[in-house]
Image (cartoon, rainbow over all chains, first blue to last red; front, side, top):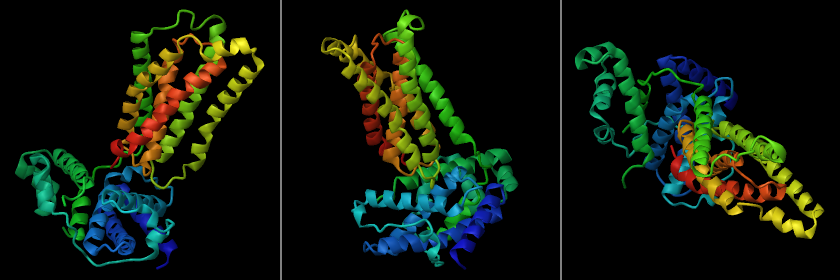
Amino acid sequence: MNVKSAERELQALMTEGLRGDAAAYKALLSKLTGHLRAYFKGRLARLGRGAVEAEDLVQEALIGIHTRRHTYDPSQPFTPWAYAIARYKLLDHLRRTRVSIKDLPIEEADDLLAHDDLSDAESAYDLQMLLARIAPKMRQAIQYVKLDGLSVSEAAARSGMSESAIKVSVHRGMKALALLISKGRPS
Amino acid sequence: MKTSQFIDLLSSDVQPVRRGIVGKALAVALVIGGVAAVILMLITVGLRPDVFQGAGSMLLLVKLLFTLSLVALGTLFLIAASYPGRNVRRRLAFLLLPFLAIASLGLGAILLATPMTRQDMIFGPEWLTCLMCIPLFAIAPFAALIWALRMAAPTDLRRTGAIAGLVAGALGATAYALHCPGDSIPFIAIWYGLPILLWTLLGAVLGPHLLRW
């Protein structure tokens, strides 16, 4: 699969996802993850850093892409947008861990799609610890809908909240997680 | 946690995307910031009595042209900077134009004036008030712009912060122009230009801290 067709597929999935197609959006995130992983592993390897740190970055980039997906314009190419976010998260991470940024090579947006790393890896972020730090209402909504696998209506019945309240709590919970993750993992 | 699990989590958040929100937030920030700056001006130094009449009104036009062109061009940059992957270099270059215009007009005015009047031109009435008030009036606009930009995804925080500072400074200068008794172009170039550049610098320093996402 060359870069052009990868771009077309990602753009199509993202556009469908933005329209509310949850399956397409999940496929988009999964496919993008392979590219992000290869990109971050490659950049970090040059600086002598390992796979777990790369996976931290993958998840930081994913949640950044997710919470800022409203800044993607479906009429524009997808790769430059995703690449700009990936590079932003990389530079932010390196700045926080005090690496000289001058050593980074000059890149192009298409570099993001050049490689794929499909291994399912683990980051140093601990989901339970992160969830413990957000408000109970949001945590419960996320617990029911995602971790326990309940449907929105089942979660609504069990918690006594309305269906839209559940969705709003999940959404706010995600933003809270994004904020925690942007503060970096405690080291 | 495993990324596959994380993706499951993210894709359960299915709130519909609100696409126009960044533009709306910036518009709101400009209006609220501008109004706040004018209110602060009215409370502190007050409206100039002949602001819309007489010779002062010509220079008021020049002042507003200078400051509002910076607000407009700066906002165009901020809009582009809010969306990852957009090329903003051209919009950045345009921001120099108002400065170049007023600087050359100011220089011309100084050269054409007699040596005696030059001093009065440059150190016109209340230059110190100007220097102090414009940065003060820019605080609320800056806070409002940061609020709006935090809903966006700027990827160069220093540059975005700098232009937010520039727009805020220009809005503060717009408010001050309604009071300002100074009536020469060199005066405008120096005592409006400096505070705006000061806020640009301040914005560049604060950007990475306030805009991080």
